[in-house]
Length: 249
Ligand SMILES: *[C@@H]1O[C@H](CO)[C@@H](O)[C@H](O)[C@H]1NC(C)=O
Ligand SMILES: *[C@@H]1O[C@H](CO)[C@@H](O)[C@H](O)[C@H]1NC(C)=O
Image (cartoon, rainbow, N blue to C red; front, side, top):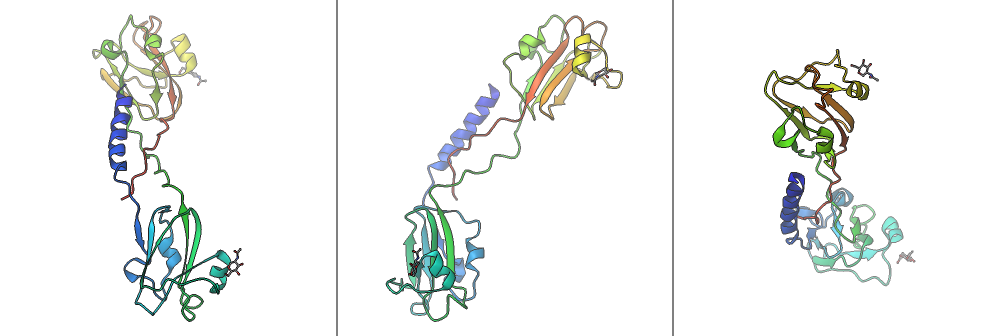
């Protein structure tokens, strides 16, 4: 329940941010503009160009121009004879379709020896942001308000609950009355106190679930385990995060 609430809040925040999504204007070469001896591929690298965005080629009027070409012409720095150049010195190109786009300068040898060529890949929509690297986890009080105690059905309690890596189990009990041993499946079945493991005895024992898989916990006091003070859970990898609409700054 708490988890759902948490993600709902995240989603609401993300949805609010998403409404501010708008097309982006890229000044080619940033403050350098469209100029000789600038590495436009390095500039373009990792920039997300998306349909609707605009490229602005900025340069001193008359010094350069901009030809939209195909991949071959880009490679060979050949100006298509029928191609009209943009020459305003502040040429705005709206990226209308997805796919690869090539632009070169058609003045002198600016493309061949001046590096004035730009290749970009335009995406149809924004890429999904990566999932958050850390699942915040939730705190699960074993047995809820009953805590860790006799005469409680922990399997019934655990049934239907989802335990994820990163969640914390809290075993709560009066100090000295019970304890908590991590056990294996056999020890759990047979209520064998694992000699090699140390008991948790604080009365508020917090166990962070570190790995997915089956986990077993038993009380090592008297015959408490035989009486049912034992918990078996299956821990799942952390929940798959459904990314909200991409927000572009
Ligand atoms: C690429 O452009 C050149 C120059 O305009 C043209 O000759 C050639 O046919 C084009 N190639 C393709 C595959 O469109
Ligand atoms: C399970 O735990 C018991 C008690 O600590 C131990 O004797 C046994 O070797 C363990 N079995 C496995 C398969 O680890």
